[in-house]
Image (cartoon, rainbow, N blue to C red; front, top):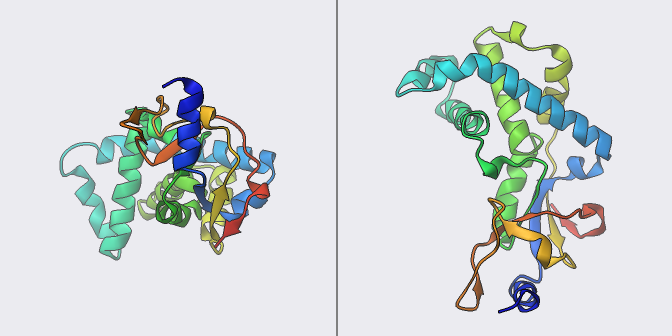
Length: 208
């Protein structure tokens, strides 16, 4: 199968791809998105220098449980700490935050959209770590100029949205990890993709 046939097969099997986001992110201009992304990255860098040694290691993270009122709140913190670890320590390629992620499964896009209310996964991690800094009285580690914009976005009313994308260039699709898409026995392997091109998401249908 040559490349042209491969790309035609991708379009045939996945004529519509979905992107889960928050409508407020789409409404931002490029500078606003860039500034918030940089703030999230810096917050994670600063706080992980402190929290990293406290939560890495078997059982260590359990000392934070009394600081949270409910099991769900603590679960959110442990999830954020795990994601932070994979971002900072493991350099996991799944966390390529400048990439645009698309999926062929609409329900998956809806799931992603729920976390987009924190400004995507990176915003979820940054905000959760900010909350942890307040709970442990370590806010001195964090300039308000960094934390306030993140908290303001996260604490405002979320507007989860799913965008239906068509007319994309299939040659610019990669796997979630950024590898080449494989065709196995005439089927596209995988359902979640990283798009290497630029798409104007305001031009596509949005559902909430």
